[in-house]
Length: 263
Image (cartoon, rainbow, N blue to C red; front, side, top):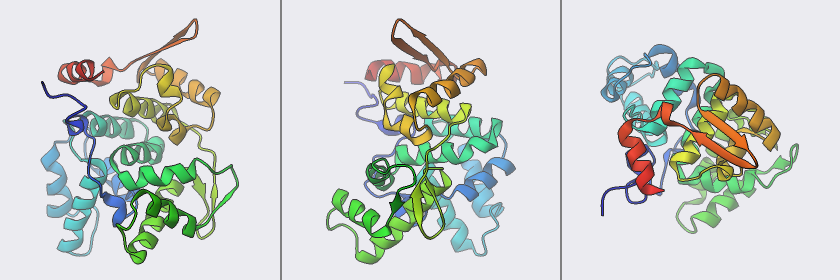
C-alpha cells in the first residue's frame, strides 16, 4: 500500500499528536502576525529557526523563550512551507493580513486536538450566550479523561478561550460570550481548503466544522467564497444543486496525486 493521507496526514501539514500547543499557549496569533509581517512570502522551513532563535525577530527576552516560541509555533502551525496546510496560510496571510486571525484559527484547529475538542462546546452556544471557564475545563476533561491536572486544565481552558476570542468566535476579556464570525474571502477559501485536505468534498465542505470556524451561516459563507473565486483563490461552481470546489491552483502536482489516492 502506498503512502496516503489516511496513513500519513503529516504529508499535507496535519498533526496526529494527542497533545498540542494549547497545553502551554494560545494560538500565538501576535507572534504569527509578526512573522508574516517581517518574513518574505517565499520563506524556507529553516528560515524560521534562524529568525526566531538566531535573530530574535519576535523580540523575546531570553534564548530560552525564543526556543520555546519556536517549539510552540511549530506544534501549532508546522512552520513548513513544503506542506500545503501551512503554505497556503502563509500565502493568504501575506495577501490579506486582516484575514490572519481566522487563518490561524483554522490551521491550529486542524492540528491541535485540544482546540478541536473545545469547539464542541463553542459551537453549541448561541450568539451572546456566556461561556464559563469551568464549562470549558469540563469539556476538555470529557475529551481527555484523567489526562490533565486541574491546574493544566485551567490553563488550557484559558488558552483555547483566548484563541477563540482572537479568531472571532468569542468576545470579552474576563467574561466570554459567543460571537458570530464574519468571513473574509481569504479565510473562507482557506477553511474550505483545509477541509478539502481532510477529505471533505462539495456540499460536505459547506456543512463542515471548518465552515463553522469562519462563518455563521451558509449564505454568508457563499458570499465570501464567491469573492474568493473572483480573486482566483479557488474555483467554485454551483449548478443544479451540485457544489464543486477546485483547489488545483493551490496544490503541487504531488499533493494532487496524494489527495486523489486518499479520496
